[in-house]
Length: 527
Image (cartoon, rainbow, N blue to C red):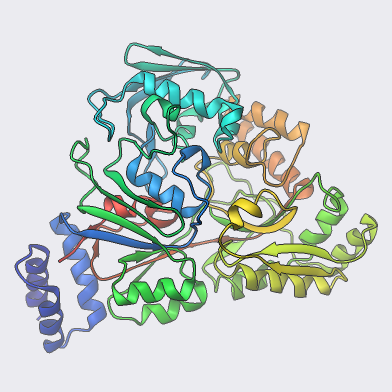
């Protein structure tokens, strides 16, 4: 019986038998729908990718203010769409290793201060022009310019000069940096014609899909680029992203077949969705974390005792249980967890109303503390804020929770208001995470954390080639952030996506949601 079902599954993968007929035959043989669908996915993967069709995703994390300028990538939609139309010099694979992309190889001087990237030849931009090392240079120059307000500005500050040498681009650093190649995978560093200096919002890159639709906050789309250089992605004829910020609507769109994949499934409904025939939950742990961030330079949060009070006033275990439903782990007020190779365990901070009350009284603050939140901050963000409100009350701290509209949250609340809910997807290395969000001069230092000692250690660790010493520096930096920073990090989340029965080629990738952002590019439509 199983052999017959497997044979029929292969026929479906080869386009010789319809999926509907296959499921009917499998049911007649006494095979469950869940088993039949899993077999289809397995066989399709073994048989290889199928080409054609329109692959659609329903995503949370988009707004009317979104831009195609890679410098401004700041939410899930702009990030994921950029992975479809653009590419960087390197690419992180599912195992966390760097792979060549627009740069075919790279290497450094013995002191890790000079890095040379050999740029591929024959790569075509969507406008028909050939990509050259000069385009790479211009891209890096634009993201190094403080006027660009690029999210990559923090990691670019360590570069002293960049030059073109034949087919190579050479980076000379101010200080040694063993992690520089990882920084080149930053999602803002999409290589554009003339670096995007002429028109950064044009959406012209070297990726497998050429932008055809850009209706910010509503719909984004692309068609397969005929001149694309790789064969291991870009299987669908067209890809489409529909912005669906409401979780229930997103799930309904997947069940009805309006889209084939969705992101940010609310942990509360995972078990229900698992029962739906043909729907597969795709969850993976990684570096993503949900947090409450406060500006360290804005009253009353400029008082570290108040920040400590807020950190002791959050019940982490309760949030992991009630918000994540176990799909994650507790946080410790730093952005670093065991997913990072140089992670060091430190004393775990727990919910302690007495310590929270002590630090709150010591801070001298009185009255309520305003916390802004929104459904788009992360799945369950409003519920998390309310749980926080309840646990803080046990320490005598009054949190006033204000629910903000989803559209505009990332442009008007995050990185502007002094206390709000947020999330970070993490970065490949500790240096990149700290440099992007905790370095004093970083554009995205969203807690306004300014600490000279931390900055000094950041540069010291970056140039330290002795792994044990480097790990020790990161441990000390983590302690500083935990005890003095403005991030209240109660939990690290699993990325929970879901796919319909037509999706083939899915692999587990904990770098970011939707297979590190590449699901639309690397998956295909099964018949």
